[in-house]
Length: 162
Image 1: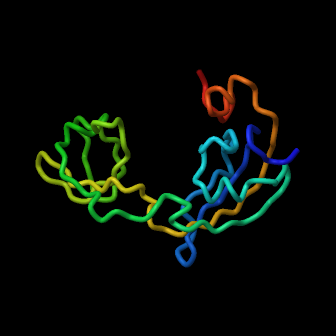
Image 2: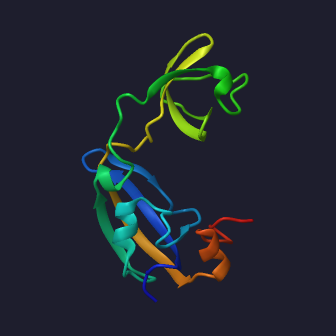
């Protein structure tokens, strides 16, 4: 069965940046599971998955425009430490990823500078502006259930549980 819209896909990946080396991988854990064609992956990776089937292995390089977007140099801001979710009593360090409450919901931010009561954070996605290389191994492909299509994501092991 090939990967097309409304199919649930399980895959392993190895992510690296050309010239920099490995960033992360899923091997040794559970595969990533998503509903194809519903925006569950970055655009460049989802496009590359189209047409592959279980057992396929392939590599794809994704530009920032089809990945996490370009870096926005104006995306740094100063916030009170109290806005960090679960941050009470935490020791913050530059480079640390934190979850922050914003008017539009929770966001991940990276600590740039630590003050006594405030943090300077960068709200760009940590992979924004970077060209990404993926080595993919497709584990399985199946038809999605009607409820998964209605909800816009995969359910069950590796997917979203309700």
